[in-house]
Image (cartoon, rainbow, N blue to C red; front, side, top):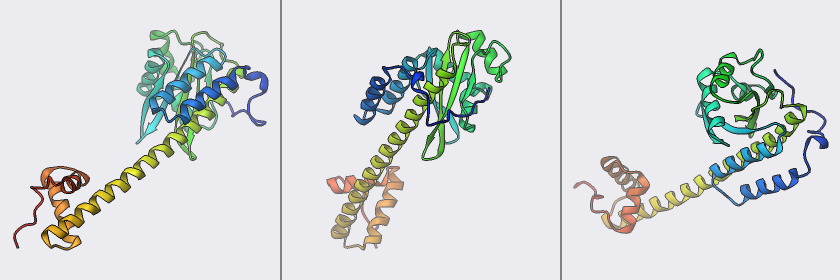
Length: 249
C-alpha cells in the first residue's frame, strides 16, 4: 500500500504525543555529543518504538556500495526481518528506498504487496504490520527506516505521521554522521600529507636526492614491504628507516 508523504507542513499536533519534545531532545543529545554511529542508530530505533503508536520494533537499513546493510535494530526479530527483506528482494524498506512515498501494510496476513516477505515473516515472527520510510542524505537515497507492529491494524494514519517525524530526524542524523566522517577523513588526510612531507624532507637531506626521488623511494618501499605510504613515512620520521635506502647509483 503506497501513500504520499504527509502534507501541510508535517504531522498534525494530535499525532505526536506530549513527550515527543523530550524524546527528540534526548535524540539530539546523542547526536551532538558525538557518540558512535551504532549508538545513534540504536537511539533512533528505540525512540520510534516509544513515539509511534502501535510500533513494537524498528530497524534502519542503509544502502552502502549498492548493498543493503542493517545498521541498527531494536531486537533480533527486527534485524531478522531486514535479512528476510534482502533475501526476498521485496518489502517496505526495499520499496521505500526507491519510492518517495512511505510504504505501509497494516496487516500482512491479508493480501500483502510483499507476498514472499509476508510468508516468511508470518511463519517465523509475531510481526503483522509494517511501515517503511526512505532516508535521504544530501538528496541521495541512503536507506530506510522500518517499523513493525505485532498486532494487525495497529498502524494508523497517526502512526504513519509519527513515523515520518522519526524518519526526518533519522535523515538529519545520517547527514550529521556523514559530515562527521568527511571531517575525520579530511583531518586524517592532512595529517598523512604532513607525515609524508616530513619523510620526503628527511630523505632528501640524508641521501642528497630530489623531492621526486625521495617520494619515489617512499612509494617503492611501501610496495616492497606491503605497507601504506603513511606507515613508511612514519618509520622515516621516527628514525626506524633501515629499509628505506636509495639504490646505489
